[in-house]
Amino acid sequence: MVIKKTSLPLDSLAAHYLPADYTDTFVCEVDTTVQIAPDDVLVCFWTDFPAWVKMLFGLRNFLVRFVGLKGAEDNNLEAFEECIRTGVSYGLASIPTKNEQETVLLLTDKHLNAYLSVRIEKNGEHNKVFAITLVHYHNTLGRVYFFFVRPFHGVIMRCMLKRSVWAGFSRKPETPETDRPGGISESI
Image 1 (cartoon, rainbow, N blue to C red):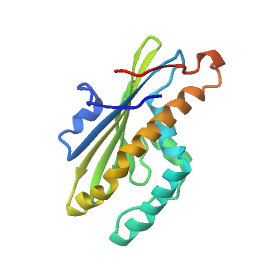
Image 2: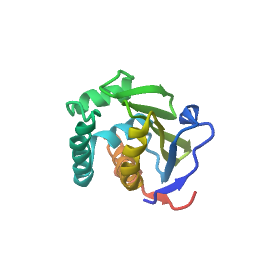
Image 3: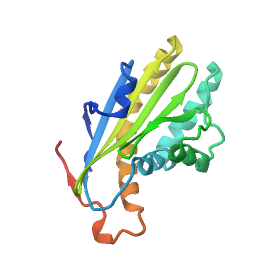
């Protein structure tokens, strides 16, 4: 599955939070009859990490304590999933807006706000799945923090989008084996 960097769709819910200090958008294309919601991809994105990403988040959570930033709450994945699906706040996470096509997750801390959105554009069996990031710095600590995060951000986003899309489209139990994602388009 090919993940490409692209521009933010103009009608994206995330566009309401522009201008931002940092933005990026990644997209992949999947041809399948399986129906999936943005919440499904976002839940997989935040609850199913590969070991190397868990290690990086663990290092991040350890280091940020020394500058007074929030780390992971209690790693209650069920509560985090409930936050995404119902909009109930959980720790530093909330869902400021969503519709059938897109869910926007907001992570708020004293140094920055990060908006992470999953958007799915459907055209018959052809699906474009977008992962959108917008970051607003509150202060110098936000700029310094993201300076160190940024080199890893794109790699992690590509990996997590690919993993989440595959898992999201493949986890539907009512889906026959032949309807799982197979026709992956490489161009936008």
